[in-house]
Image 1 (spheres, rainbow, N blue to C red):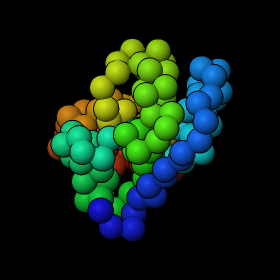
Image 2 (cartoon, rainbow, N blue to C red):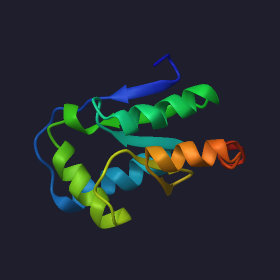
Image 3 (cartoon, rainbow, N blue to C red):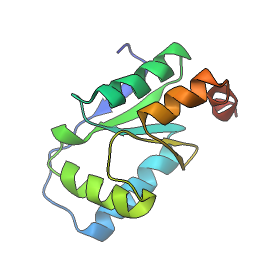
Length: 116
């Protein structure tokens, strides 16, 4: 990946479920595009590559590189209804995973979501 996304790694003590949910809420509110990812996941790579193609900066949280990654993934499952990664948020709304982002791009629906 180029310089269009910021990779955030956090190694901290485990937080409570309420703190994790607040972290997720704050993260998706702070940036236009947020990707909760795992560095080795091909679907995550697909999603990140789509945003690279459209030159959209994204904030990436690599869950496998964080001490609290499993807790974040469990809390994301409670919020979104699915546990798989990536979980992609645009303007605070979950748009799905890698295949979903690629389908939005292929259909021409992704770029209008990024305007504004």
